[in-house]
Length: 318
Ligand code: NDP
Ligand code: OXD
Image (tube, rainbow, N blue to C red; front, side, top):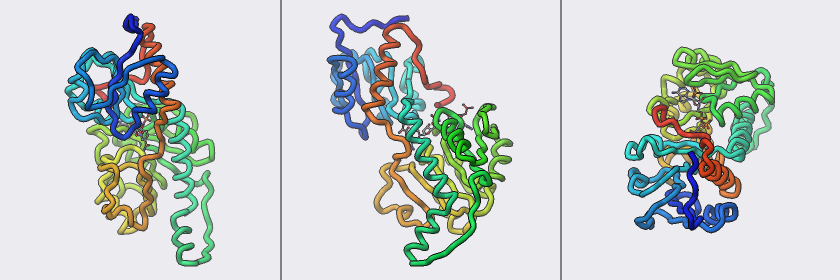
């Protein structure tokens, strides 16, 4: 069904994403769509709104709006949207998935896996101690990397790791086939994969099933010295369990890009943990100059009666 724009041709947007810059979004969107009205939460007037641009909106904030046709998530992750039961189930939610996100995530995980693979943290420690210390190393073809989540980002990342010779294992909820990747699914599949995983990358969406999935039980199944990279969501990692596994030496190190509370508070002891690398949720960035193209294309297609893509499945939660 086509959804023609109003006779005035002026589309109305609500912007509910406190960490993103509404000016940039207005600027880039209007380059492609022409004049538009973009209201920034909480200053949204009581009138019909065509589209919502949102990232982690306050609970119930979208439901209050009138006339909304589509909600665009400004993040690839839709926690905070998919699980907001006040949003009517028939209102389409489209998640962000432009090429820049896939490229950014792939580059970030390659850098993180290569750093873990070649003991970058240890050599940084040796440098600080002015120590010249040789050691043998494995080749990528001898290293097993496990990727939790084989979706748009996880799948692309797994393939990129395979292209540079890592032995890649991947885990999903339903059975998947990805060329070059040994695929596992379900609880039994996870246990088999973890036993072999020397570097673990978490690229799962946050749902009730994946909350605190990186916990003591999971870490215990990894071989001694394994390295954990969490680029999914902070709430997927039981931080106390992670720190305990690092402190006993069972885990060799961790890189955390996402945290239960963001920004990570300045007083958090994680900042100073010698075996933890921290980055501020930058693994893949949604950049307005490319992301607006994706949203505009979807809006044009929707208004012309074409199907929206990357729709969130509210039942599944991602
Ligand atoms: P997709 O929705 O495309 O894929 C999700 C994958 O996870 C699928 O393979 C799915 O399985 C699997 N999965 C979901 N639930 C489970 C489960 N319970 N058990 C096993 N596997 C499961 O997501 P993307 O790849 O696009 O993104 C993944 C996540 O990355 C986002 O949700 C977001 O949280 C995070 N992210 C982080 C960023 C950062 O900068 N740190 C930036 C962007 C995203 P199946 O294939 O069977 O459906
Ligand atoms: C995310 C994103 O979901 O930045 O984290 O896209």
